[in-house]
Amino acid sequence: MFGGTDKGTKVYIETFGCTANLGDERRLRVMLRRSGYELVSDETQADIVIVNTCTVVQRTELNVLRRIEELRERGKEVVVAGCMAAAQPELLRAKFGDVKLITPAEVQRLPLDFELDGVIGIVNIANGCVGNCTYCIVKRARGKLRSYETHEIVRAVENLVHRGAKEIRLTAQDCSAYGLDRGGCSGSSSRDRSRLPSLLSEVTAVPGDFKMRVGMMNPFTLLDILDETLDAFEHEKVFKFFHVPVQSGSDSVLRDMKRPYSVEDFKEIARSIRRKFKDCVLCTDFIIGFPTETEEDFQQSLELLKELKPEKVNITRFSPRPGTEAAKLKDLLEREKKRRSRIFAETYHKIALEKNQELVGAVKEVLVTEEGVKGGVIARDAAYRTIVLKERLPLGMKLTVKIVGAKSTYLVATPAA
Ligand code: F3S
Image 1 (spheres, rainbow, N blue to C red):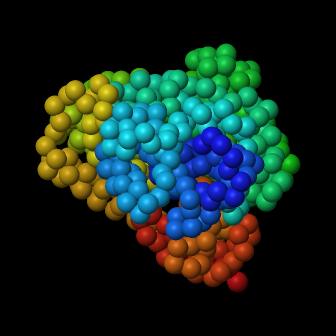
Image 2: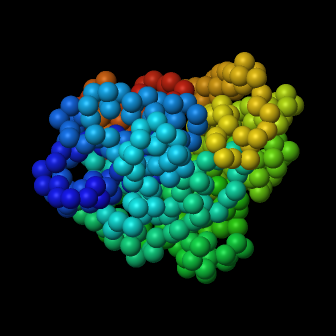
């Protein structure tokens, strides 16, 4: 991939951004090892550092650029992979000369084989999307939707489970768009063999003791397969975790964002999920301070938040991204965007804390999936809530715990006697 022979060359990879980008890193790792590179866990030992970049918001872009600069100042050879390599090659060349780039499209050509980290496996099921959101740079980075064949995905899951994966994250820029590029069409029926519900029934049929977390599903691609998708989520191997980004509680802002659904459509999705699954996590994303967002639009987002009370919310303060339609609109004042984001975040944390506090005293079956940053471990319940235990337990262990504490973004538990 870098040309020449590479036996023993030490490579360190640092990834920014989403689970899909992390999936790309894990694929790259398999390829690099096979080509004879040695992967190291610390940049100081590395001959080459691959910075696997993200550019979804301006702040991340700036962090990435700073990091590349810092590594080059330390004398490291830097290779830039990920979304910036595809969306902003001119910027990278202007700053760093003829720096070597690896685009996501090049990673897509590698075999669908992922390195396992601990007990969490990641499987990218598609790349790109079918949307045209006016604020989004990801389309430039990842292009049109290309879904992997079901049998390739099933094989990737089997490999990971065979190597000890207990949690598999199925990921894509839009999981519910899966298959739309391969004959699956909007308005598809339950007989449609190429879309997400059918993929889920294939991967849950893989033998072994593991659970799947399905990644982001856009309302406009989820709507016409909603019932079948919810049926597929009933399987015990699927976490009852629904990440459906709404982005705004105002229909006029959604129109300006070119998100082809209404707030009512989103509410219908949320209600259907909650009707079917008494215990679930509804996760959504809001962009605050889109250029055409008025105070009234903002209040509508706030009302939607208070009405639906999602368990998890990702809040992004709007920043113009180069080459997008929204970048041509007059941006709101930074001060105003900050004010709205602060109010929004405070409201969300209050709601989330109240919901989590209701769970104190509950007894739950959990799966230990990660080491905690401050010692102890992180476990997941059936709805994929983050549950922190201070005990050092083996990864992959299943146990019964009692919830003894609550924060807005996680629960604290102890093993039940
Ligand atoms: Fe970032 Fe690219 Fe993911 S822009 S959020 S790494 S798809």
